[in-house]
Length: 381
Ligand SMILES: Cc1ncc(COP(=O)(O)O)c(C=O)c1O
Image (cartoon, rainbow, N blue to C red; front, side, top):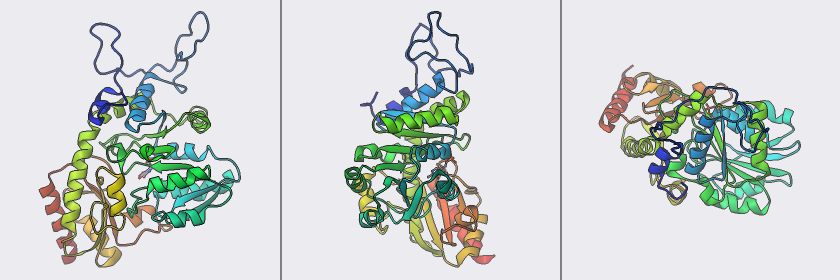
């Protein structure tokens, strides 16, 4: 279904081919962990054991692969398990470039494990190709990108990095959790691997944890990722795979509304007293706006902003909302926000007056009102 529009693909990409009259339109959940062996011995593609492959996971991998225009996808039990699988494809002595602003879990994973795995890592500013080029070494084998980055919303020109890296035989990976395939398909720009925390927009309802790696090409890197998936065993359950396929069917329409609400709210916020700066790539004032406009179809549902008055003001704002819930994570239909540095902990490099807002699908006027009253309340307490 690769040439179909995303709305159609999201609905039909995980459906089963009709094999008999009265077949269910919605596939069932296949809980069996084991499959009866063919009498004449195993044939290529036979199901054997649910950790190795399962019909619900196959449906999920098929639709995710198509959404990202890839050659193959491997689904995982969480976004961080998918990230881990990508780093496990590297070898002892390899060097990796990671954005200086990056999902804190990725940073922590690298801090804790890279040395034991024998990986050399450097965190670099990826808003300029020159800094990426300058940080590259003879043993650099992978460049990790987030665009927009979590939580400061820096933008990277992914085509420029991919073009340059491929001449050096470096694998380029984009964690596309924030932008989603509705807004950008990194593979269109030459990116080798795309990673998602499907917990976020693809799941969309804050009720499941999942991850995926999608590869541009079949080959040894994807074979290794498949080995990590099966041999290290971080696979999603049939129920989680089914839930995610169900959620993906409405993903493009949810994403359209996330984009719309966030764009309107970000513009509104630039005029609010009490806010020092708004980071949203859709704003012309954003440093990465020009590149974002070239490579993204829309600018996503995440906004980060700095409030006047430092950390205590930021915490008061977060505590004063009525509709927007104070919670971590993102991508659900409900709006949530958090004082990001508190969540990341003492090693965090996030500004201490930064609030990270995941804009949900409530009516925009209710969100504007809640934001205004939270800022006002924080000024009077
Ligand atoms: C950009 C990004 N990647 C990966 C993850 C990790 O995903 P999970 O929580 O599903 O393991 C997150 C979680 O917040 C994220 O924001």
